[in-house]
Length: 215
Image (cartoon, rainbow, N blue to C red; front, side, top):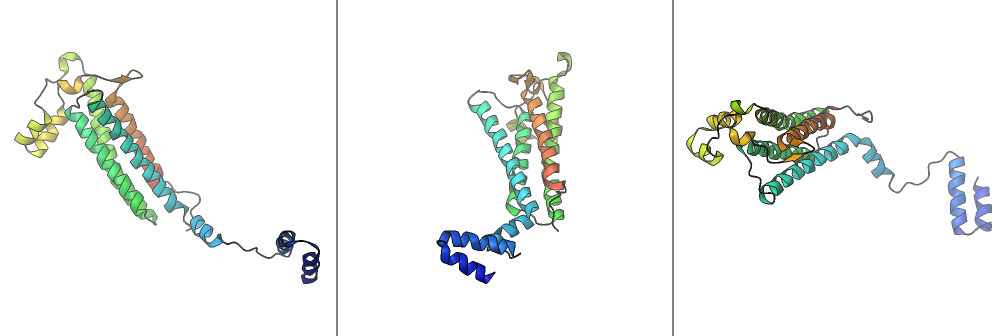
């Protein structure tokens, strides 16, 4: 083999000799030089951590998009949010913070990923319940719709916190009004769909066992 390399090195220019060396090294069962091999190996050995961070970051961006459109609807379309809408916004913000926290920490172990998954599921499922309640109120017969109550700011100033939550979840006539639709569905319906999709995304991101796990 050394004689063969010296022969080709004397006959060919530097580039061809280098290519010949690589081919001969492969033929001899040697491992060619890999300048970024260690970095690639480290990335390949921890795909779960990277994918968890990316998935939670995508969830955070989705929550940012939901809040951006909610503010657009309020300040540009002039759609005033009812108390149940405000509670749904709180759930979206809390869910976005859990997504961001999980993406920043990027837990290494499966138990850590499950922990952040549970933290994110709490506001997601709360949002499902609130949005579902809102949809139910909007589909009540007109004679069963609760009468309009005071604004949320007044309730916060005059009632204890749990009484405010109970009053808001009861709903009123303002929550039953439909001011916006897309493909025939109201905004609470689409919010409910988004919460359900995000809850499924959390289960996929935090609890799914990837086949590429190396340890």
